[in-house]
Image 1 (cartoon, helix red, strand yellow):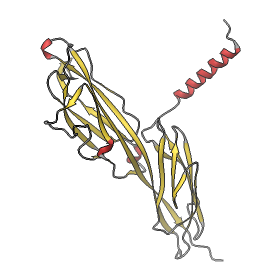
Image 2 (cartoon, rainbow, N blue to C red):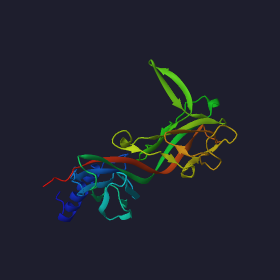
Image 3 (cartoon, rainbow, N blue to C red):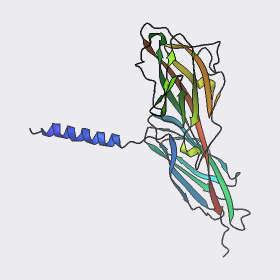
Length: 302
């Protein structure tokens, strides 16, 4: 059977789109600096050097606020000659703010004039800057709740959603229902018991590669108002240990890395077993700092 030309074109376009989509690779380092270029790295006294790079969004959603800020130009030794923020806006003499769609990038260009006085020999200067952006995350755990008096095997399994992309991630430590030995190995089953409170912990951590390599994360704190529990079929037990208030907000700011604990009571149910859900949402500003070394040369005598 022959495909009509129009249908054939549609099939080719569809397959090409599938192939392109499969090549998309998201990263937990959402906003990164790519293709850094510094020229010249050894400017002469009073000369101009150009710092240029791409600010890239490696995530799966828009970043409405990504900021590049050259906050320390060697204690003011360098002066800004020119600043270009591609499709962004200048928010200071040496700072740009961008809105970047997923898998897209914006160009940052900063031209600096090197100091001219007091340069009698090759002199090294450190230029410091930061990259910051706003992001959010979510994680959910589905916990089986069983009626142990029925003496029947539980049919539901504990499940945890994949972590959302981003430098900050959360993971659950669910209640342990039973441990048993199977062929010489220990198998742990996670479930809660009907009519009994159970205890769970949520661990927050920084998983960005930049935190352990070239960049350094800056004092990662999530304000308590930007973290919230999302509960289904279960309630907080207020008179037992819990780091959350009755509305599901943390009682204190979350300092990464950090762990939050709480006790929960499943709602009653009629069937043999039920499922309850523990979810956590959080939004944050992530900042990491970087630096460049520039060596200023004295002017050649003629």
